[in-house]
Image (cartoon, rainbow, N blue to C red; front, side, top):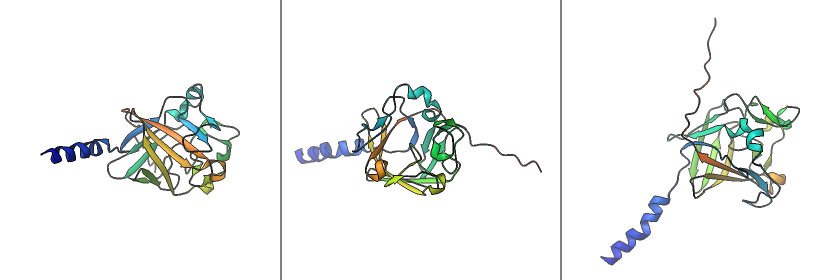
Amino acid sequence: MKKIYLILFLALPMFFSAQSVQGTWKLAQQAGALAVGPNQGDGSWWSNSANDLTVRDCFFDDSITFDANGNMMHYMDGSTWVEAWQGVASEQCGTPVAPHDGSGTYTYTFANNQLTVNGLGAHIGLPKAINGGEINDPANAVSSITYEISFGANGELIADIQSAGGGTGWWRFIYQPTNAAPPPPPTTHDVT
């Protein structure tokens, strides 16, 4: 009987500790939710400040939903953080730039602590961060990106990608779960 209890005792933590990306997520409302540095988890090159929560509020209110069927939806509500490589004069809140505007059809897989998002322009965090480097033109968008995923003590989704510094540095994006309903998809009308 002792052996059975021991097996259950060892198996239960594995059963209850399994986490999923399924659900709706927003960038964590905290300094350091966006960070980049030479090593995974190291934000020594740059990280967002508490003030950036206001300056970049158009980015911190974006949400990402991963449904049970492997679909990914990226909601930007008409405004997000855009940078000079996307054709604007300076970094600012502005209209999302295709193909990183959430209008595509995206899917995802999550296995072995790796999240892969698929579909031209699919991304989490900053759209310039791709595997092995950063893009400098929307025309160079990729159709698949893989992130290393871990979960924080309070249920945060922590996504790391080796991308910055010519592909030798790491970006980190920290997301928190949200119960806020995503906005409905845009409505189009045929006026013929």
